[in-house]
Image (cartoon, rainbow, N blue to C red; front, top):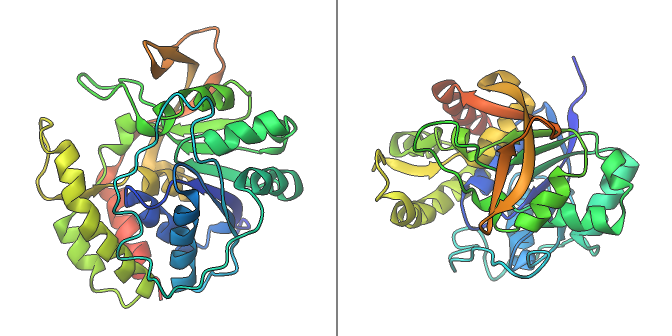
Length: 307
């Protein structure tokens, strides 16, 4: 049996609940060895406390959590903040110890000393600043797996995606750096959803972590519906889309998705981040299809196994 994959998880946990679900999946998966968590976007201290609380509930308070970059690298864009962040997770009485180092420095040290596989489920600002501060991280990162980008793989599908687009310049820096990348784009992740029936199954868990995540899902669901209910084909039973958990699952079992190699050039077109097909550009591994029912069942079973 192969040893667990040592990873650093870079996240904007706290807004969309999928980051919290993704963290729970990491902790439920013996195939992964979570060495560090870094937070990005807006109130990174609050995001770090959210991550640390979830780790503590799962008995993993030894995993360091470092707060990182608050604003897009050129400060010409803005990150999403809805005001519900931390509800149902944090309590005023919580005493949570965060890493004293900045997330960028934690990332640099993690990949240079431990050769951690970097998993990004938020904007790429921390990774971009790490590259600017210490270019040696480009060679030190053995692989980057990211939730981000939209390729327009399906007619009428999305062309703009939040993680890559909210700090488009950071995305250009990272994806032009030349490190090995596996991209799990919005085209695929919008096909995987957690519905009310799935949530009812998770509610049978005795895990404090899972129950807390369920509470956070309940808070997120009406906000989520407000954003997406007007879109054609929207299922009113959907509680959350599973963008980030699918990205984590690709590390555990790549067969959940179909991976192809595409020549893609990162670009900013009319102010929006795009991945443009270009035969002269570097190749990226891209998930282009997903076995959604199998993945969702896997996710639920893994979370139900948490003590």
